[in-house]
Image (cartoon, rainbow, N blue to C red; front, top):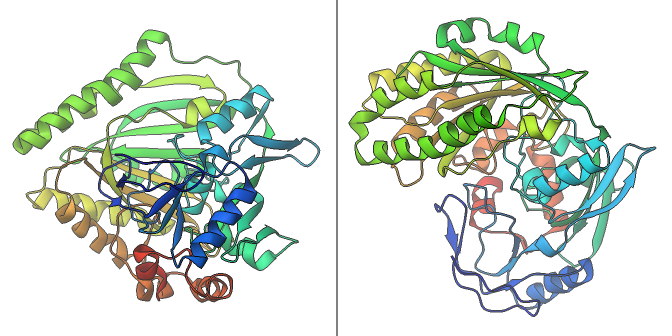
Length: 442
């Protein structure tokens, strides 16, 4: 992967995403050091007839950020701008990595309420694609936004909140890069708290039968099912008084580094080379993780290192449909010749009020399917997608799917509201690309 990142806009070689399944060759790459430089880059691109896309760390599996025009790298626009303790907010520049925000907030005695399990993304990339964790009452990272700044197609800077440009705010929190380039985000934060995590193996039949019970009893519940087995691993995160009691250095290394990264990398490499070994490996791997309980500050519980690269599809379903869909997925895998070495992840989110959030207007559960990078994934994902769409599923904007604007116009009651706003803010599609043409229409 080679990218030239000069302020004056140098010629660039191919850009590649984290998983390696998307590449693009922009005409030039810019790394603005200020909002003003970004505004000028957008104006210049429009004058030159080039499209503009901002790219964070490339953790999306779709081509949402791909462009043959001007590729904007916002990483120089980073850091906390201000903290308002009275209002319970923090304003952060858009290129800030989530891991850096989490650490900086913790140093100030503050935290986001909820977050996903990967912390490498920029705050703007994560929110624009609808990145989420799991929560009974607390929603996605985008749902924690209180205001944002957006550079529009004419190079102007638009400030959006519930009170200022509220119609833009309703859409731009999950904007898929279609409405402009986010330059700053104000998040709701709260005083730092402790979470106690309880991880426990559990059988597939039990966890699916008791799913609603686990959901109701825990602030954050999720589980992983290992295909070709009847085994799952559950995780329940709940607030506690503390004190911190993190995993010991040896047990933490075994669980988080050896089993989840080192050994997992090795067994996936073996499975890719010899697919027939996967069911046996899955049976062993699903029994390797043991029950454990630990307590720490939020980001140290919610997030974990993910160095084994993969390709992912995730669909948001009405929560009431998730157990039926998961059982259908298991039956499909069992009767097929597919060999799946990655566990299937199930999480939840409450309904929110963001136009194109995958949880917009409905209580939601997510099913995510993965395949090791370099392994053919199309047959598995196609079969899974058939199940998910039959239940009215909405795919994650940053993960593999085949849906188009016609499908989304039915899946999202507020789809027309979003596309009408896009027509107003970017009539010439300065921020367009092939992916947005497919999912939003021409």
